[in-house]
Image 1 (cartoon, rainbow, N blue to C red):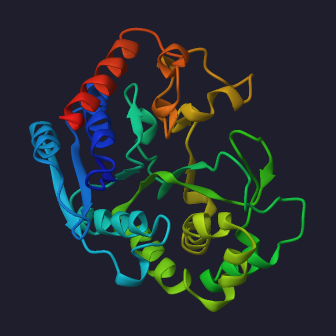
Image 2 (image 1 turned 120 degrees about the vertical axis):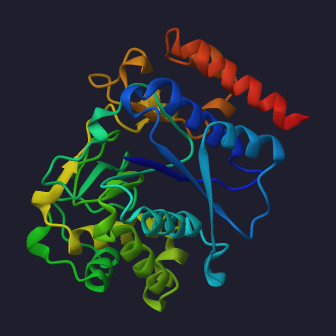
Length: 304
């Protein structure tokens, strides 16, 4: 198993160190797994402080090139980073864990171990947003996604979003994936995204609502998965994986953990930027003290 994520110099260096140290501290038998940080080679250099901290934690820093036309497009760099990680991983591991950098591993992630028949483990999206409700006709946007990705409608199934709990057609969360590198799925995602994101047919949707521009990368991922992976080879990860800490108050009460110590991993997004986050953090020691120390310590280092 290899853990991988993208780091943007001066923007997500702090998050990268928190994620890496959480793997070494809480991942149990997977704590010594290889960790790869994908860094865009035209967005500046990682600060010396953070580079030293990453290298001290045995992180391999892998540069990658962003396609010129996609540099200013939301999440385009992440798509290309995932493809590079998968390319590097081929022949080196039977499973690649792709994470958003603002993730924390909280306990041994046994759920990341793919069953023998599985080619991909995933989480559904948290909110429906541009998703396609299962009991409604396929709309024009998703019709285009399916057509351009060559999705067989017979393979479309129902899944439930984690926060607003709506039944939708497949819509995979691009921030948490476990893949078989040899499948080439992330590279196929990148190729399809670069082919489609500026296609004329999608421009009216970008003009209609910014959410289409923000999340087309995730829609294309969904199309590629449906086209290339048999549903029998898909594995839905439990709700304890990739839990959205920043949506804790909105999470369904019956499924909401009392403390995040109960989880396998979480994403925090803007949680630590909110006023009073220390008092609102639903965690117990030793995790609570660990998070407080890392967030405060790293902020001080960046401010130097």
